[in-house]
Image 1 (tube, rainbow, N blue to C red):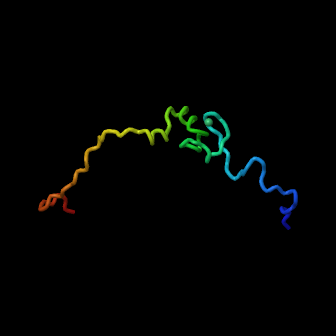
Image 2 (tube, rainbow, N blue to C red):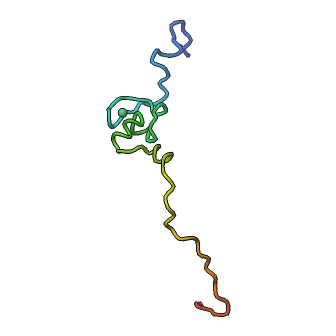
Image 3 (tube, protein in one colour):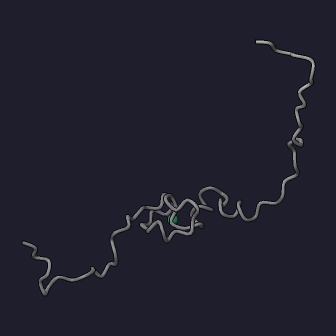
Length: 90
Ligand SMILES: [Zn+2]
């Protein structure tokens, strides 16, 4: 007994598909669709501008604009086990 095939049944509302959940930006408190957010934290900010304004930096900017840091960590040292000298005998 399905009554969804009536002539008055509209296929989609004028508001667009509501399959996606609207979130509220924690900075500007605007409602937005996460998939359309330009922020790297699209579940938190409506755009990267809000992310930038709230955090003081952009995570996406850090990823793309990060200069090559000087290698601080020492090079991998190969641990050569010394033969003929058993250190630990279980
Ligand atoms: Zn916002």
